[in-house]
Image (cartoon, rainbow, N blue to C red):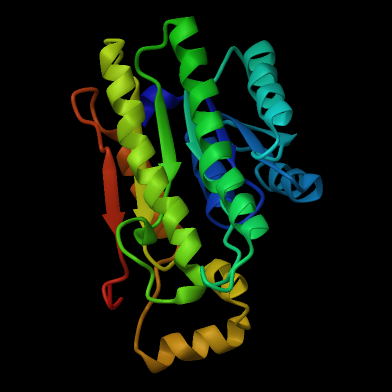
Length: 255
């Protein structure tokens, strides 16, 4: 991680859970982190929490589904900090509903965040690196284990579709970078069930009930720290190694 000291990262979905954990770890490693999310108060609280750390946290209110806000965030990072060297595209939403009973408006909302907005961030980050001659930059797309199979829960079928598309997109980006003879790396990091409450909110199940169900089936979920460990591994490899597609699961998960 030494090579990232003093460099600039932009993290989406940074106000809570996995995104906030990413920001905290990167700041502790000396990075200047532009933390992007929709809720200003949560970003400011995270900044206060990390005061005195080795690096810096810079809150920026941004919705990844808003094109102008995405461009503004990257422009601010370029003007103020010199430009983004690492982009962690973590923002994501899941709106529960089967395909047969679901609403197209809910599908579009998920696509806008999980795919279109995420790829927009990746595009702007990569093009900025290319313009600045940064040949060792990195883009991490935070996917899901549901990007590898059809979700067992029908309520998450369309969410899984968006994560399948994101995984394919990572390979598409990698091939485009290879055509440009660039060594900017692209990684799709996909955890299984993480204990953040994300899935229970999407399926409309109270967290207490979800925790009881996990206990019933004897499954110990992943923790945010496990996902952070995967991220650090992914961005710490030497230039000859690209962790392009990383899937990891709770040991007990029936996957």
